[in-house]
Image 1: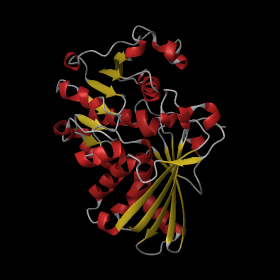
Image 2: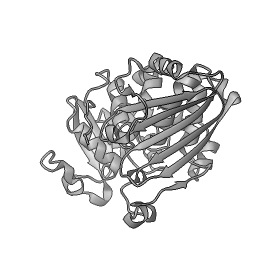
Image 3: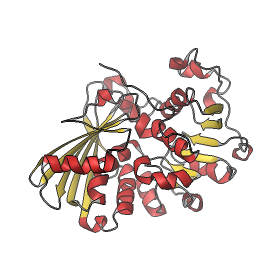
Length: 343
């Protein structure tokens, strides 16, 4: 059994880690922290887990005292993981769900996150955890930087085109997300009267997931940054869960719908969690699952790729567990064969 801990278990990411890991046949959860809820039962904060666990939240211990654990999930706000990781024992495998260790350039990190990075030495030991692209590196890694939710959808939509040298010119990434992407803590932009019937754009030209997308794509095709650029625009939509990405690509040469389908199938036919769908995917069919549904359309010199994921599962906790499975040499699907609902 993998002895696992979750630092930061009271938010939505922590809640999803609990929902998945409590039923993972190869994991024994030994520690769940949430300083403001220390001493409370987990199901008092996450009532969906009532009768499913007797765990209680604990105060975060000194990271140097976590050597008894095999794996630690860091589901902490941006900026906190970089304070924890340098003190963790080297024997403990780490999966960080925040943005702290995704970017390998300290100046770019400061530009998009708004504060200095204090653990760049440790950052060099992290592997970027986009499972379907970096699987071999993840298997050998002890430190994983889990991708952002928007980044996961956009990267998986673009990867076949960039790796094949077919994505040239300007790429328009139109991304939409539900309110859970803003986290569990109440804020003006998550207040029900504000969010329930609204639709608006945010973080224009400054979303923190854009540089990690560009970094990942450059790693699979070094020539791509000189051939293409991304306009990345996020939108808030009046749903709770889910990300829907519409990605507009001007390919290097005209592509038919059949050729696009063949390219996607070539890259993803053996990927259990990636489902190629006819027409448009729907966020309803991926909610509460680790699946990525991809659809597409093509007309001459324009290709549109549609991607739907659950922002809290494949976009966070599910992909983190998928990476843990790889790191410990167990079946990649273990604990993650989750069916969505209909309707």
